[in-house]
Length: 202
Image (tube, rainbow, N blue to C red):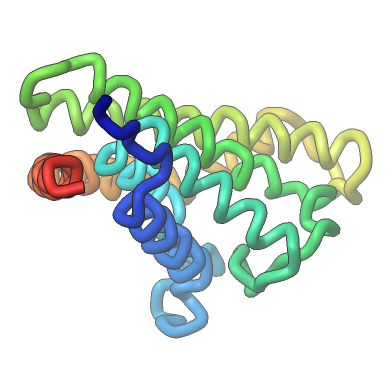
């Protein structure tokens, strides 16, 4: 009887850890590169690495990487933006974006995996843009609810104002999501070729 393959292989855990580290770097890139703060708005790379994780690792591992990232931060590691962390982050207005990464990565991977044989670059780009949209919808609605219900909202705060804030980083995230979609196919195929090898020799 053939031995059952382990649910989590060493390569899976390694890839999840890699994207957790990339998310932490992406959240705080302006700490090392302050020139990426434009007009007072930090240019983070979290959305980019989130959709890249979903595109490259697939829905299961991509979402798992984002879940681990969230849990590592909640348990106190300074991996969130501005080197934040801890369970107090849950009540922050921007915590919805962290939650959204799980769904965004899953959706990105799911769309790509719907094409069983050799997904096209167009599918990768489309999936990355859908993932980015999910990130914005969940994150912005969480932020609006937080400011309305428990956080100190700025004067005259409204739903439209919440979305107007998101228009500043939107062009950047659209461009980076397209870049992720273009980059991902080669990485996707290389990882699956490597995974196939490990299954063969296990």
